[in-house]
Image (cartoon, rainbow, N blue to C red):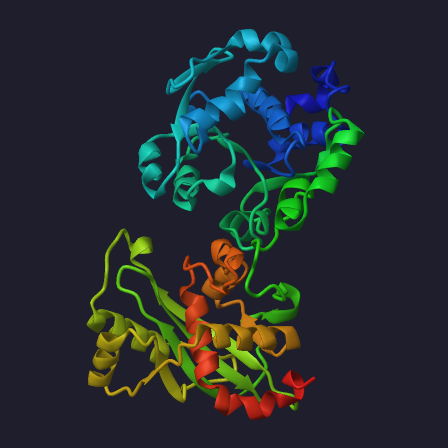
Length: 435
């Protein structure tokens, strides 16, 4: 257990600049391998986490490197070393922090510290092969997931730890879904903070910040919440209302379609759409399949390979807890002529999707608002995209309704399946949509 627990004088002089919650986070950070501070701007996350980092350096294992990671070396300097070298903040300790802006190494408390910028997917190669004993990571949510994952594999010396900070992002950000929500399993402790947790802020400043901002910026950066994107297309999306566990899927009356968005270098995404056998039926996105060259080191698949993998998944996977399912239609992206031909060679008939973006979005939105579209937790791609699927702000300013074409492959597949089969399911759902 931490030496700090039996050494309260280690905090001498800090009670006037740290809240009780902040001091507790410094102490409790040592309880887990990974400590994460998140929350509003000016909540004191960096200040508090750097105190924990300095204390961690004193006990860091000798067999591993100490590293600091940020998006760039400039952001590492601005966010980390400007504070560490400020005697008004860290007092006498600044004498033991030696760093020149732009350099890739620093000396802190007598230990050599290596600095890394991680601004793209290839950044993880910078730490391959290294052994890390202690890492400080600035603004995790804007770093590539691959770098974070590689860093976890480098913590192979006994006592290795990571301390990290971030402002909140989307509810479906990988950091929240895969790490914060699974904190105990991941050996992680999470400290969420708001501006009110920072005793150095004047009440008037906090009041001004709360009054000056609104929307997603206010929720994320002032309240410290993980929220949906600004200008979300499906703003009625509610995880508690619309998402269900796959094993809790209601009995399915018909599997209406498999809807697929086609990509060569982009993601190919496919979704199974069913309608429940309930007295008041609902639509369900039951399961999904995808292939992304980005997730396979740029390796693309031929149409024959895509077709084979898709059909292997479709025919060989249990898509419903209630038994085998066979979709009535295979609905493909209108641009997927070559894939359509390949599937025909495999004996599968397909239909081109009705690609009315505006009408399709309106229909999906009405289903969500009425609470008659469910999405199982197997549809991870849908769940990742739906909160970030946003209107193009420039088009909105020009009076147009146009979505941003970024990470929308599952959104397109969902729209294809639902809009193209509307004549089949609409009679069963009029009870809800007419309300």
